[in-house]
Amino acid sequence: MPDIAKKKKKKHLFWKCLKFLFSRVVLVALLIAVQLLMLIVGVLRFTEYYYIFASVSTLIAMLTVCYVISMEYNAGYKIAWIVVVLVFQPVGAVIYFIFSGNTLSRKVKVAMSRITSITAALKEDKSGILRRLAAEAPDAWRQSAYIDRICMCPPYDASAARYLPTGEAFLESLLAELETAERYIFLEYFIIGHGEMWEKIRQILVRKAAAGVDVRVIYDDFGSITRLHKRYPKELGEVGIRCHVFHPFVPILDARQNNRDHRKICVIDGYTAFTGGINIGDEYINLTHPHGYWKDNAVMVKGDAAWSFTLMFLTMWDYLDHPAVHRDEKSYEQYRPAVQKNCPADGIIQPYTDNPLDSEPAGENIYLHMLYHASRYVWITTPYLIIDEQMEQALCTAARSGVDVRIVTPGIPDKKTINETTKSYYGRLLESGVRIYEYTPGFIHAKTFVCDDLYATVGSVNLDFRSLFLHFECGVWMYRASAVADIKTDMTRVLESSREITQTDCRVSFLRRLYRSVLDLIAPML
Image (cartoon, rainbow, N blue to C red):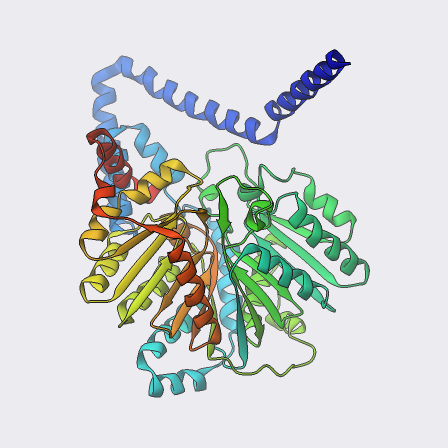
């Protein structure tokens, strides 16, 4: 009998390995590797004509550098790409034009621009709230007015926000709210993966779809590529759930693959919405423990403010559904709550979105506004700390001005190289008085700012270049909301469970310092 068990185990392992080797991830990676190899071989072949090759490659590199300088990119990002272009001539120029960022086709840009135009056309006029803020709290008004103007998401005072400090609390609230759905359920997540969390959600979605509720799902293909197979949207369609995949990942060297849908949104009947850092996967509710305890958070918004999240979802859905169709703005009105429910005022609740279609880093600027206007403290949690010069300067200036600036990063990272890049910033920040902590129980994935007991924001925006400049992101900004105190309380518990970093911790070997310096140089591309 033991021999039979061993044979079965070996057979199972063989088929598991075979399945992995022929999986979509391996095939895509292999095809991309072949394209890169062909590119390198092609370049090397040209070295037979060295003098011509050297002259041409230098010319290409210099022209590319001039082009990089002329672009409306962040200065740190430009420097990183200039280094790549000059060091890896002429392959660096090719890599730049493939992977540099928002080099989308004109057709795709036009189709995606509808997201902005529809949002602008349907933005509610909340100038009365802004005027009141301007008179009562000029600093809050400046922050709110920026979000209103740039993100086209107005402030709301007839809404409430409930802070959910863990993935477990989020799932409990989400399941309860999904059961109340009568008209529609919209879900948009960077990652959806098979497991207990998704199965509990899926069962409710299937049941609600069968009862006539309009159920739609959007997920990012890159985020879910190892978790869902290519035919999964069709499977959901067979049980009444409409589904779209954002920018299907294809084995072609294409800059469009840089732009991902990193948002986390759930909207129920236009009255309730969820956002935050939590995706749909078992690690987010600690059923699996790949990196210790997974600390995350979310916010549940109720009331008028949920409309902003409804618009975010619907405009993205229409882009994915049929980019060529220009839908009438009036058709969106049918998704407003059928019955206006009274919601007690709970400060100012203002959802926001950021996208890579323009040169305005709204997510970063919302963070910067909080740093600029802080008078007592700004506490931050982020899974990754890959910041540009402007953000670093704002953190350092606030700390030097006497503001209690604290940043919590993971104690157990999910990506070691990225974590080394994160650590490369510690020394300079510590010298300026910024206090840095590492969350010792595990991985902190929450993207949170809380400031002066007045302001807070929770969302999907990491402190790294991809979140700040390349991805579709979202969050919710709060002023004098009860959730702000709850966020501070949770942050206090996080700090108590974290180890404070000192300058002694930053003393590493020469080779490690060199490694971190190289990573620091190319940080904007990570």
